[in-house]
Length: 503
Image (cartoon, rainbow, N blue to C red):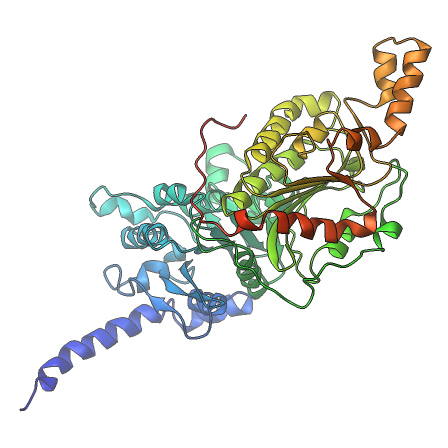
C-alpha cells in the first residue's frame, strides 16, 4: 500500500507557512522594541500566564493572512492545573487594533468561557476597533462585550492591561471582575490623546488621560497596579487561586502550613482599646489569616476601608474591614463603592465574607452628601445584605449609625456568627452628640453616655452578639464560624439569582 503522504505534502507545507506567518507577530524589530521598554510580546504574555506547555491556540489563521493572527492571540490552557481561556492583544501588529476576525475570536472566547464554565483572562494593549473595518462588509453577530456582560457572576473574568488600551478594547476592563494595570506602561481611555485634542481641544498625555494613577486612585477601575508585566500576570494567577472556575463550583481549599486554630496575642499590641486612637487594620488582617495568604485589591482607592482576599484554615474568604488609620475608619463614597463591588463579585463565587468593623459611621459633611454618600452607603448595605454566603461579623471597637448596618452588624442580617471585642461601643450616633441634638435633660444625657460606655455587654445579654471574645481569640473564633457553616460551604452550588436593583 503506497498511501497518500506525497499528496498531503503541499497542503502541509502551506499550513506550516501560514502558521509561521501568524506566529511571527510584528517582526523582530517591533518585538525588540516591546522588550526594550520592559514589555512582553503577546505570545510571551500568554506563556507567562499559563502553566508551561499548556497553551492550545484558537484562531491562529484568523484574518486574511496579512495581519498575523489578526492582532489577537487566543486560546486555552491551564493555571495551576485548572482550565482557563486567554486572549492577548498584539500591539506589534496593526497597533493591536480589533479587526473583524479578532472580534469573532473575542466573542468565541467569551462564549466558550460560559459554555465550558472556565475563567477568562484578557490582556489589553491595543487601539480599539480597526478603522479599515468600515471598508469590509460583515454579517451582524453577537459581540464580545455582549458576551462579557453575560459572564458576570458565572465565571471569573480578569483584564490585564499591559500597554495603552482605547475604545472598544478598553471597555473590557470595567466589564471584568478584576483589572490589573502595569505601572508606567498601561493606560485606559475611551479615546486616546489625538482624538481628545481633536474633539475637545485638550492636550494631554496617555498617562494623564488614563494611566495607573488615574484608575487606581481616581476612577477605581484598577484593582491592582503591578511594577512589571510579569508581576501583573503573577497577580492574575493569584486572584484565580482564590476563586472557583465557575459559580457552579466551590472555592478551592488550599491547606498550607498555617491552617490550625491559634491565639493571636499580638492584637493586644496592635489594637488600642481607646476608640479615638488610630491603628493599621492591615496588621490585624496579617496576624489573623493564614500566613502569606492575604492579597489586597483596590489598595489605593477608598482607603478608609480595606478589601482583601485571604485564606482562613486554607479556605478562601473575602475580607471587608474598616481602616481606622484613614478618616478614623469613616466610610466615604469611594470606600462604599469599592466594598459593594468587591462583595458582589466575591460572594457570586461563594467566598465566605468576613466583616471587621471599626468605624464612626459613614462620612458626614456637605462634601460627602454632594458626592452621594447616602446612595453609595445604601448600595454597600444592599450588597452585603444580599450576600448568601457564610458571613462572619466582628466589632473591634466602635460602630455608629449606618456604619454598623453596612458592615453587617445588625441582628438577623444572615450572620453565621456575630462577635465583639470587650469595650466595643455602638449606637445610632455618639451619645454626647445624640443627647445634645435631642435637647435631652441632664439625667437622660448621663444615661446615654453610661449606656454607650458600657460596651457590648447589653447586646451580648440580648444575644445580639453571639459572643464577646478576647482579641487574641479572634482567629480561632472565625475558624469556628467557618466550621459551623461547613455544610453550606460544601455545596451544591448554583449561580446567584437576584431580583431587584441596587441603589
